[in-house]
Length: 329
Ligand SMILES: Nc1ncnc2c1ncn2[C@@H]1O[C@H](COP(=O)(O)OP(=O)(O)O)[C@@H](O)[C@H]1O
Ligand SMILES: [Mg+2]
Image (cartoon, rainbow, N blue to C red; front, side):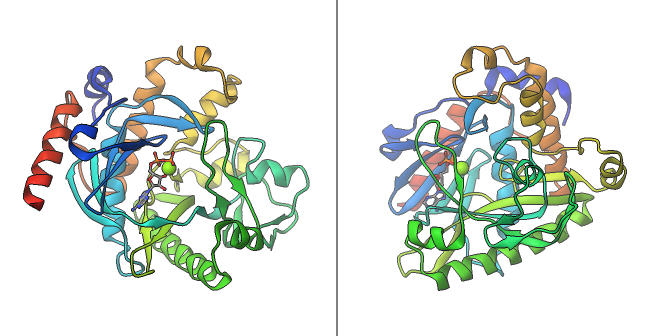
């Protein structure tokens, strides 16, 4: 992906769109706008980037990269668990089966890291050793590899300024109304997905550091993988090549994910809710650099070229929706 093309696309980022006239009332998420229509969920991936749970700006082509990367991973994990994917009629549009989501994010981690006060690394540094039923060994440093991949679920909280909360398996079962058996099934699936993701990422020269999965139930009560999978929004990716040397010298990792933006903001103290004014002055270069990183990890892992659609995405997505609806009839 070429910097000039990204620069030009800054004028056409997909921030707000509204397709309710064709799809009915929608729901605006932090990143995607979803519409339920005829049992299907139409998810329009915007270019919005959310960090620390707040809207931070728009990254050119981000919606397209995320949609196509998730599509790649859905195809490569279908044998582990059924997923919601029906089709990708446009690189900014996922059509999925509408499911009943479990209000939980299944987080899987193979490394201990993070920059916020609630991150696993900061809590460990302050003395915490037990996380969601696992006791971590002494002597870990920031970005240490864990003895095994662990599942640390958190509740999916909605509403402005509400952060997702990390909880124990027992709390989760009580909160989310999940039976302990179902929770065990989800954990076991999450670990299998993570192992597959790590293996494929490793072949491409990346470490899948941690990630989160969302699951739901279809009308027959079957478990379905929903939302997105192994994208740079939902996962951390580090370059394998530089890991050892950076870890040994205590330097930051080579981030190919949202951590790149989080770090930039945290170095400037911009991690709190209500700093819209300061955030509106973030230089466009940060978003261009983020796009280039997202595009690189996409290309390396999928082996595809990121020749994404340029120009105004709104009429193009609208056209794809109308076409899809026509073919459904
Ligand atoms: N197949 C599905 N059925 C029902 N809900 C889904 C499905 N896939 C994803 N979702 C939900 O759609 C939303 C996606 O938009 P997003 O911008 O990630 O929202 P959020 O701000 O809630 O994270 C999420 O709330 C996710 O749980
Ligand atoms: Mg989300």
